[in-house]
Amino acid sequence: MNRIRVLLADDQSLFREGLRTLLSVQPDLEVVGEAANGAEALTLAASQHPQVVLMDVHMPVLDGVTATRKLHESHPAYRVIMLTTFDDDEYVFEGLRAGAVGYLLKDTPSQKLFEAIRAAARGESFLEPSVAAKVVAEFARLSGNSIPSKKAETSDELSDREMEIVRLLARGLSNREIAEQLVITEGTVKNHVSNILSKLGVRDRTQAVLKAKENGWV
Image 1: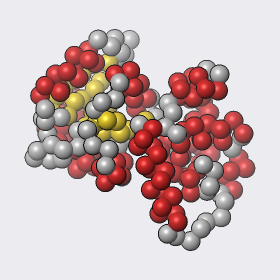
Image 2: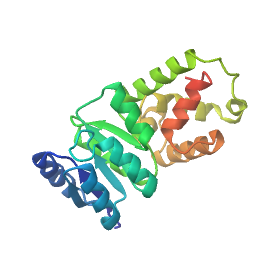
Image 3: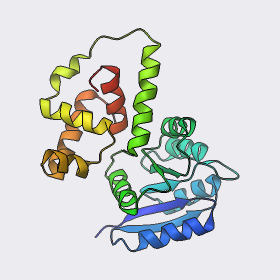
């Protein structure tokens, strides 16, 4: 089995140790390094080649958002999940703009964390439902201050099932949760999501939700 290589970046050593212990019991996950600040995270990422980085927001020397931006510029294939105690709008949007593909709170249930790491390694995005709601609300606010755009022609290209999945993505549901709700396989959901991203010309689920909101589909 090819294990997912995970890098931990957090200035609290006890929290890092707890995360390492938590992840170590998962047969498909491997912690390849621990960083106490953003600068250390960049150095370790360059040498350890993680697939997923769990990045805290507030760290000394170099904060998590700046480190995420630098990491995204130098190693765009490395997927960053912001893992923090803060769900303030400022941190959510700054983290996502910096290139993070996920945003989870530190009180997230362990199974959600595992699911987020696996989703990120597959090239997917993962947002807490509360964070997804903030993203959609902010985009609605920004759209309300601009000239309304016409409905995108691409709406006709999405099937009824794909539109249904887009709306569930906007609620922050994972592939597994969507599969359970629609009574289809997780693999089928993944295929639908891939088709949606391709049709909308976006790179991840977050952008798909934003585009759907822009065009009034959700």
